[in-house]
Image (cartoon, rainbow, N blue to C red):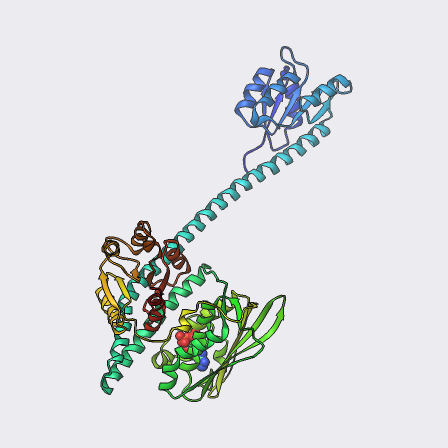
Length: 531
Ligand code: ADP
């Protein structure tokens, strides 16, 4: 602080003021004179003083009254005052002085050292207060800047998230069409040479979809915007489902994939089955990908049990190419692969393990790897689950229904994308359902009002009227039929909140795009039986 502190000297006799000024001449302060109470009040209102040296006895307004008035100004409420008086020892003055807020008294005749000592102390206090005030202003500024930076960062994150979800939707829509068309082509018994091209197409499209999903997932985890569900599920069924999803690849490459589940694992547990599936698909997917011949084993066994909770250890063991020692520490980092030829040969982004590790750790688990080059790798992790006393989970249409004709099932497909329309219809007609198509939500609402359907497959983003709005309109119609009509959303979004929104708008369920034909079948087939 560079400005000199100011001290106001109030005395009706200039001679006295001069004496004080001489005594204080060596201090680094600015002295201001006032020769009456009125003048003192006026000056104190205009200027900030570090201290006032106040004569008590003055004609007209005395020192006490002057101080009372000075202190009425909120800015001067706490201004330190030292009374200069010959009557210090008289109780009357002492009490009155203290009542007006005097901080100190100096009796006449003044001893210079005492005056200088006291004024010096007050100047120090004043300087400290000023420094504190400056620091507060400085800190407030920093706080403001931080808030601004935080808001900017949050805006940027939101923009990034929005950009990613829009882009992924835009990319996934045509990609869905490619993947579904490739799937259809494979079922039309192509020639062997055509099959080879189709396989390349499938490999690349699946890989691209994986990349898009991985990037989305990673950005979501990175932004800390991930929630875990708690649902009851049968671990045995979940593992069997995962095994089956690799059937094609495992058979094609003459590998073996086996599951070992310890008999002490309860039949039903509670946890996030979707994320567990994602973790396992990633690890088993890698094991299958990086194994040329031999066996991949998925093992699950209890690690510990306490207070109705069980920690289950999962081991994914392969007899594949293994990971070089110097790379083991790095494979969990994002965008890292063990060798630069990995992408070319096996595809992938190097994001899978980074995502997997975060998904495990965020649920209170830990993931480890042991590997020998040329011999194989074992990835293991443990996760806590709540033990359920159920022996099975009801209403698991996915497991119960077998593949059969859905003759007689009346389906309305609401989808604006022509290619998607074609693909869905192709499967639906294969299962002998009766299909109508609506190009947007508005047409769908009209058609639902005029016809009777067993199930509606509803795309969400469409021109004219979205799937959300159309569902609201249908649910608002009078008649139980409109409330009970199963409406299944077709969504490309992997976000939990988008899925929650689907239910908030009154839809019955959802199928993610690119849809798995089996999932589509299992989702809509129960509605055949309802009639
Ligand atoms: P991606 O599989 O997309 O390349 P990941 O993060 O899943 O990315 O894996 C990173 C790298 O770790 C892989 O590229 C591979 O080099 C190595 N890796 C992962 N799992 C295995 C495994 N089971 N056997 C051999 N190498 C593996």
